[in-house]
Length: 251
Image (cartoon, rainbow, N blue to C red; front, side, top):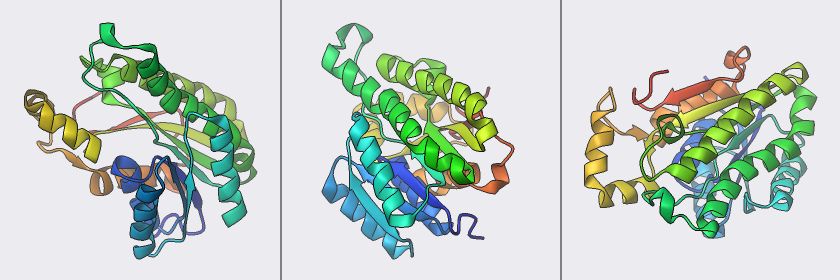
């Protein structure tokens, strides 16, 4: 069943990994798509994949760390499709595996600005459009924020800040018909594969902590959860954290 027919979604950082998996699931559900990211070639490849699934897609080269780029992505979506119903804040840069004591200002700024600031900017720019018809915001959190993984300090802090922001926004924007939820995924992506390949002991640890016994797939395991949060089937769900991680975190 195509649960998102006629709905317009913007997915940030959608060129690969979890962002692309969510965009693919949205395409399969009938959504009109805008995808953004920093690398034009990656976005073009992703768009070709999505068009091959039958979706109408626009791409926007944008850096989530800049408010003007968030505004550009929102404006491009409205100009192309006339409305915005779903916002997925997936874009996030990080430096995994680095001890907290060794983080320099550039690494700290890149992680916080791409994730937290990017989420703030896109939410604020999107709100006037989302409240026009009622909308869904899906912000990406992480197990590392809840659990507090070693070598994940600034990333964890960023993701927990996003969760706090999401709860407050859910309370403020609920009467405007805008829902805000957090999705904490655990799925293989080019970045995670590279990290796990270079840290085999951690790969074994993560797998041992996953109750279902396998690493998730961005499309098959994460995408359907995002479709649920974006659709009217979750119309009474807001301010929540959903862990789609095979049973790593059980709150």
